[in-house]
Length: 275
Image 1 (cartoon, helix red, strand yellow):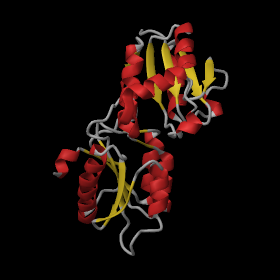
Image 2 (cartoon, one colour; image 1 turned 30 degrees about the horizontal axis):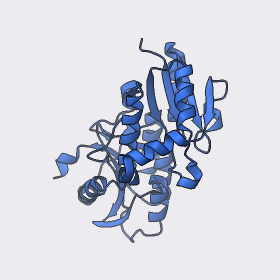
Image 3 (cartoon, one colour; image 1 turned 90 degrees about the vertical axis):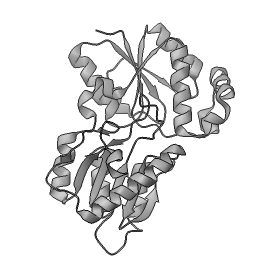
Image 4 (cartoon, helix red, strand yellow; image 1 turned 45 degrees about the vertical axis):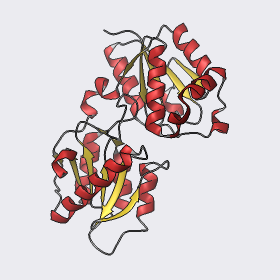
């Protein structure tokens, strides 16, 4: 078994799923919970440490005291402003070093991963531990895209790649070839909600979710779950396309069941097939 695992826990279900796996397999672990990010229920009864994102020195010191060797960054983290971050001296040194690279999410995450590796930690991707979450190339459930939906997926892939190269976001909503919205700092859920008011009087649009071409996959793979499907249904979308091998599906059985009941298609795609 590998060394002690440090779990840098964001929000949502994923950190709890990983904690459960560690408990079931007997792997030693320690959780760093972030104020304003990590759910309280994630760390109930668990060996953990509360910190703020900007307290880099304190976090590194605690990880070493806990004899952590491996690290995983798991769960969504809302990007704070510099005022909310309140970086300590160690964090300020980090930002001074990376400079303009901190402007985009992927540039920032790559720099964080590199900095943690330079401190001697072994960074592990979520999909290297929770193998069953990685999306595969297939149609999930009972419903399949029609010709128009395939064209919308193709358009979404085209736009999504450009967004990714610009380090903007991972998701786009397309209806009948029209881009209803692209994801920026607000996240996928807010994107879907926003597009509900923009949909045309026709067959619903499609959410396309891809990893960025240059993405640091150990830090921020695109993820969908039950909440994504619920919001897509409420917004009048008719399908979701995610990148096979480049996205995570949380609670797959529940996601597929909900999509089936709502008449929504869910498909794992390889972007190269839509060139």
